[in-house]
Image (tube, rainbow, N blue to C red; front, top):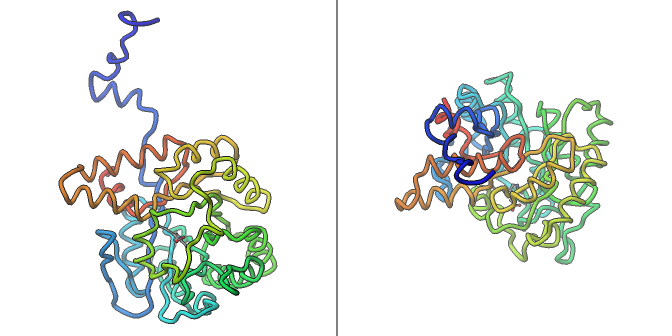
Length: 323
Ligand code: PBG
């Protein structure tokens, strides 16, 4: 049937009609809130390139997690910024490192909250790469051992979900075995399965002080031009025992979100990264976009593309808007 018999505008007439036929609905439980933890006490330090985001010391992070929980957000994802960086990222696997401290603080402040931790060395190495470097090259297999130690430190502190973002080959299977060997078989793995070498991580690297001192991440993160490789990465992580897959960034990769969603039975996360967040803020500051509308539209688009949940710095703002 076509015009004039078919008139799609009929169902757009009133808010009630539109609500009735709406296909995708956001809820606070769709969001994971990423948080940056720094060593120290009493620190709540704004991140200039990410308006509204802060670095928190472990003693103050429980309060922020509580605020998110009270808005209906079920989970946080923690990134650690240590005091000391070295070539092997040794602060990453201290039992009492900055992330383990934050995990314990959040578990105490909000016992029901899901605590996820990012597992990767780039915030802990002085060269800023995600693994061990030898002769200018990031070493795959040697890095796995260090990631294993980091994952154990997080899980033993009480993290519920370990999220490896390093993009080394075989790390999901390796971490699964390490966790199981230590009796941590209930700790889930959310794999950054499809992580592109993206310009949109810029503000994060300022926040986490993790810009590589030389070169770039193209030898381990994916080429933005590739689609089928994403499907292969997803299959590998699934076979290695991932519980949740992730696509990152989200907005420029909605086709990938859809394809991975259609391929896997596992839950799929999408990460709306720092650059996506900061772009919307920057345009809104100039009066070029309406912040809340652009935020909501970007998030509904990611969910419509197939994400089961979204990791986003907008989590508290969007949840508050939904309330
Ligand atoms: C690496 C990591 C990065 C992000 C999450 N984990 C940065 C990178 O790979 O350079 C980026 C997140 C964001 O931009 O919001 N550990």
